Image (cartoon, rainbow, N blue to C red; front, side):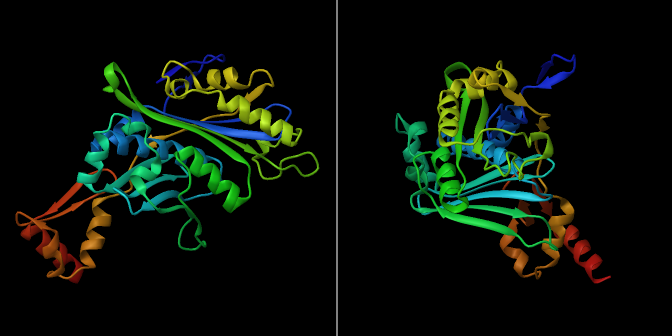
Length: 326
């Protein structure tokens, strides 16, 4: 979805990551707005509503975190716990391709989903005790970066803020929402995340930001607290409103101080699975080891992220292994 911008060009409203800077102070941020992308990812899985909402929030969080980094590769967010929801994984490539999946105990999650306030339940009700991990993988020739912290906080926003304060020693605040917009909550899924970050200045300039965002500004506790108060005024409805353009939402929040937006990054729902990758995996197994993957006489490999299925009957397996031996 796009509308005409002030320069006559189409300005994206959905599936976009919008970077911005609050004028005159050392605070920058990202706004991720996921529309069709979130609905496509969540629609393929058909998770119970509490799981879908949490996956949607993590998709949006992944977008703002990955967008704040300089990397070429894959950024992964993983949550692991001992509760009804055992694992949740979202990742984004440096090109802006997102995907996600969750593993959970269906009976225990169904019991939680029946509660009247299921969507408002704290994250701990789903995950129990566990940890949150962020990973940046830039390929086999680069050392992988990973940071892990305990799951602490009632919401995804609180957990992300805790991680940055404790593990990265960075002041950052998050405001995240995911919901089905439409009649009686049965419409399309949407998700959004607003991240603001206090950037320490060296010589009056942010050395870690891209050059386009490395603007002089005031750095103080008062300035940061004011930015947090303004950002905290955003509502879930504003975050996910398809009629409210990202730049208009940012102006609504920060117009008293001034806000500068930069070129947005397009986001897409796109998985990296392929038949070639599946066949490499199959060739690494013995013919006996393939038996556990058989369903109705066929080896069935299902991608946990996009739910795509790759099927191989006996003739296809014979050809696959004969090619491997050739």
